[in-house]
Image (tube, rainbow, N blue to C red; front, side):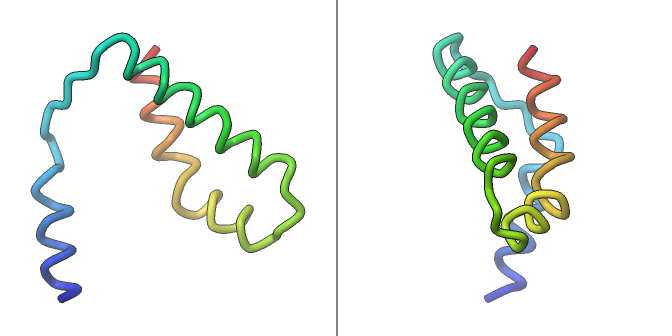
Length: 66
């Protein structure tokens, strides 16, 4: 089963995704809220997870939205 998940994840690399203006704004707000929640969190596991897996991906996504 994990092999299937890996293969499905690879199929999205390089794919173009088009968003409407309202979808872009909603995604920007969601990223901002998540980063704020992590910033105010005292849960070290959440902060570590964010730094390890999400920070660079969300930063890249936000740059593409701007």
